[in-house]
Image 1: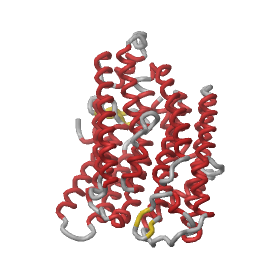
Image 2: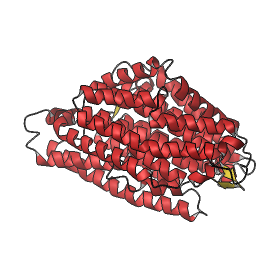
Image 3: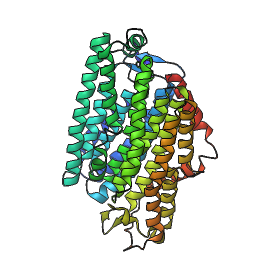
Image 4: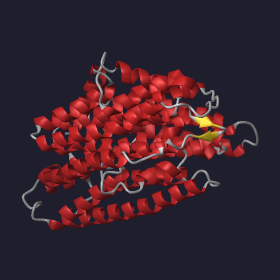
Length: 481
């Protein structure tokens, strides 16, 4: 093997090397705004990784490291979103780190290492590669949740996330051991061949292993009933970290589930379809109804993310190419909407304190008309109001469900969407019809302003040119299915 053979791995290798360089640079610096410099260096590292990602052909299935690493169109699509989402989260965080008093360069390095872990797990070709990538991502996220060591809420969020994350890792390892024990392999191709055989359905150990693996990954995407950590962690972690949790790791975990279900477990589709159906329905309904009672803006967005993951799981329940493509489109649009909504929340500060409650947005239309209208666009889009991007995201999911004869699940999706409209519209009501108690603090951040404006433009103008994203997602779905 020579260096040219490793070309599909250059994106991950470059991100790993540049992360270590930034870590050493941060340690050696004694003064100045180190965190800001490292953050810009992190954005540069993500751009370099993106350039390497597209330097290799991605219209074919390339396997490296004895099948442990897979480079294909599906992986390229998801990794592109991971790099973009991580870059947006870093840009949103730069000023926020200084506003909240935890400006440390380690914060940026942890972002990059978590992105590296996500890229590796999305391209996993066997169960060992899957676990290594997932744990690299998870360990970075545990620390990020508790990055504010002087905050009890942040420490509590990190502890809850770590304990429940360790539980899910144990479930994942137990499932992997069952699958290996009953199939004799950890390679996805070999497991897929066994799962497609006549002996698979009578192999209870394999089915139990598959269920444990799905349950462990359901924790990562906070699908009901494995969602219990999400509201507390979102509320306790710094807002920029909560935004990252909602945007990127869920996208990567959904992609990993797709690779597993449509790859090694494709022969067991009738079994796992039932699990996806139940988790989708429960997530949509629980995320919709439980979100109504929330007064914290971050807890409300946490339940919103649970409901949105339910919609993504509808596409998985279809178990076909159209459903997978619809899920990819939906997750891409969801990432944009979530980034924009959290970006607006990062702006809201009064007397030096960050926004905590929905009521803190009161009178935003009078004090900052631009932010109020942008937030309204995001809330309308998440509600599924046409012609915004969120409407088309839900439309492609429901079309896939109807095409797969999942009529009851499609109806549950519509009902859940209507219920969730209540708390989205409540945010708009508070911004435009309630009186502001006091003016907002001025917070200048060109990077944050760029992110929120770009997200708003995508949400507004997706109807004009939806074909590039939809075609890219459908092509990625063809590569995996």
